[in-house]
Image (cartoon, rainbow, N blue to C red):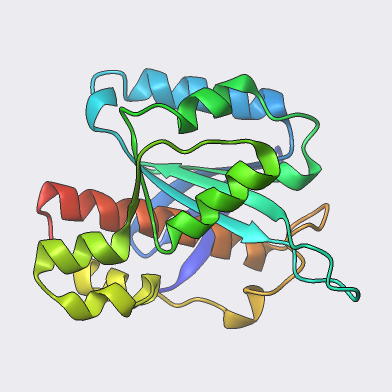
Length: 208
């Protein structure tokens, strides 16, 4: 299953296709735009806030020549068919609404290796993610397949969604702190966040 950009609206928003799903994606380094995005998510899902599943992922700046720390450069959040890609390392500021959203214990944040991701967010930005579930453990327990505890996101997409996700491996260690992300980086970041959300949602809803 391929990922592609169906439409570039020219204002930092895109329609990214993940197989048959269209994900409305916002790429930004603006705290104000993050504030607006979160307001919209809370408005759209106001009747389901006690059951909200949120896909979460981060991308790190690669190690430099002198092995300086590799901070989180991107924070990706996906709810439903809406994805936020926040260039947090280049942000003008990190809004209070993001602190509140991540710390809201009504929401379940899901991802692969998510414990390491949230530790970096806490240590580097003071962002606390309250309710965290590693999709590997959730899938292993829900599907009664212990071997899934050691699989990656692509393996979970196949196991839960029944599709093979195609990801450009060369993008994984690219310059995630670049001022302008490439289209390949945008698709990679969006696909990871959406796949995390969709696998989590299906496991919780029994839709697998």
